Every structure is written in structure tokens, then in C-alpha cells.
Length: 108
Image (cartoon, rainbow, N blue to C red; front, side, top):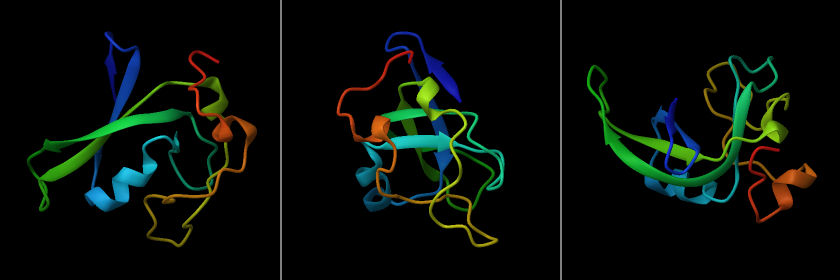
């Protein structure tokens, strides 16, 4: 994760996703978990994504997301895909009031 001081937002990467998987996440919420059984430790509304090139992996073209940090994204349980090999929950329906807002909750 890297911090963008200009926009006061974070970049999270390097996700092994296709563009059609990343596009629907813009405007939604990103929750970062160490494991599927842990509550989220960070996250917030997704502002955009971009392609990046990394080395040392088979698929070098990856996606990173820029998100606005929000306290509302801490302590949220894992939702979505939960099988043993799932590394992302994937898109899920908005279940919490803060997920239904169209204005990012900056610093909340």
C-alpha cells in the first residue's frame, strides 16, 4: 500500500484481476483482510484503478486501486467468495449504510 499525499488516498496493489473485474469495483468499497477469518484492518471507497507492471510473477500486468481511507472500513467481516483458495471476496452487495453513500467518508 502506498499513500498519495496529493489526493490523501492510498493505492492498494497488485491485484491479479481483469479489467472487467476491476471496473465494477470503482465507486464501491475495498476492505483489506489478513485472512478470511480476520476483520478488515483498512479500506475505504474505491476511487479508481490503474494498470501497473511488476516483475517476478507469471502475469506481470496487474491492477492497483486508489481508495479513500475510512474508519468505517475497519472491523468489517469477510464477505463474498469464501472457499479455501479464495484470495478476494469479489463484488458483494452493499450491506452497510456507509456502502450506500455516493460521497466518500473522508477521515470518518
